[in-house]
Image (cartoon, rainbow, N blue to C red; front, side, top):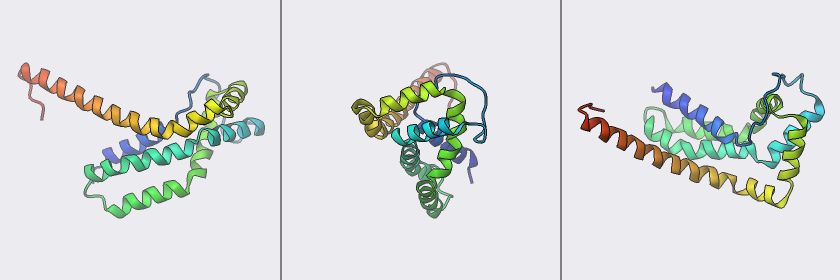
Length: 162
């Protein structure tokens, strides 16, 4: 079993989907240390930005490539992984609270919530999954092009790339 691609996939899926900009470095509060009003703002922002939906969408979008890259992993694993991701977004949201609390002040959160409650903010949240999927595809194409270019340049210098 190839664990590195699976671990890389899971890390990428989670990091990729946390799309709200993190604006300021603050202390490292735990969920217990985050004041309830700030926690409520973070929850509101995560709902408005559809953060958990983005994670699930990113995971589901990456699974077909992971199935191909890891044929030794049974299909049932991927099916169950996707199902659990869809069913367990509340746990992920709880994990995000201290991260957002650490990087966003109450004023930042209030401003972001206000933005995402506008028609423009709602539209951005609505199209963000498509933007993310299409950006991932563009990134894969760009990476393939760069890889081919580097491979060709190295081959011209006599360096063999498997």
